[in-house]
Image (cartoon, rainbow, N blue to C red; front, side, top):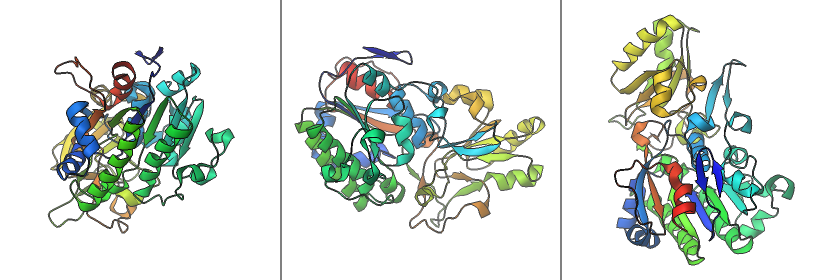
Length: 403
């Protein structure tokens, strides 16, 4: 038993796998199950444990993956976006470096006690954060051809998995994660695995779309292999996904920096979009959550004007936002702005290249993408009625209650 961030976790008695399916709006599973394409998941929904949980807001990749592996919200672990404004340097920076992490992970704590751990993530941006302080195997699909024993705890991943390195903008980047998990389970026998995918498919395809269903049918085949191998498996997501378009299918964007420049003058404010990462083809750096740095005297004025706008769901000052969304107050702006379900937030029209969006924009980041699946292939009796389940309950359920 280890105690991590105020919660206790037992070492696994059976091989245990926690899977974070990036962008998995619950309806993706519902539609694929209804189409008869996920027989393994259908059985788990009937005979295992099927919950719908809340992810953390902002509903982005980094904050939620780190919440799942720490068992805690961003107010504890410190990762409040894919990017943040670093006041010390005066620059916007990626939160990929473990220096931003303020709390240990359950993976690291269990590895210190001798549990064999393996982590496979689709994008390399998450690898160093997820593997921080952990002894074991840790690599990404994106860089699977560059692994080494010293850096990743394993070498020659490609022959093991039997797939080439996938394109970063492909469904195969996620399939590589599942395939690697199955192969590691059979050959390396990790006692605990964490698998995290990419939301390329979900950004392009709505629930029930043929390509989305094809992805979830593929996922189900790997779930069946994990199930047959006797593993305890928990499936959750880092966030949901929604269409962010106008009636003509064009992106439905409120450009905050352009607005503030008109209201306050240029260089008087700074809008940070925490969705920003190197993979802009997915979403054009447009999401439903933004944080705004302002002169002190302008916060009330700007907050009131933004809150009155169509398409804006919530505007909160720093401390109120930190409390409501469980965020580190020192890493967010003077205001937090959340847009409605069909709306995204941008900085300036000239700063977003949307030419690479091949389909109508789908994105995430707000409260409207907070609901995610939390499904285990073991029935857990006596679950608390009316409890608010979180995606970061996955390790607690898998290790403490499903063994």
